[in-house]
Image (tube, rainbow, N blue to C red):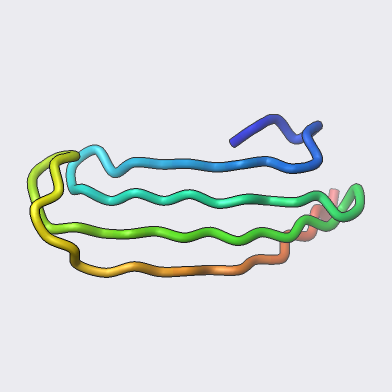
Length: 67
């Protein structure tokens, strides 16, 4: 994830043992509130080499920094 000082913070991840990929975007609305959306896809296969599609997901989030 990009540093907290960025207003828009893209994210990306790859599953090292099973082929799964995810990406998302977090947006800082105020100093203490962030909104986000993430999507992911899982595949059958070995390590990062997919052989067949398994499932996907889409998630939305609201993050409150209470510090």
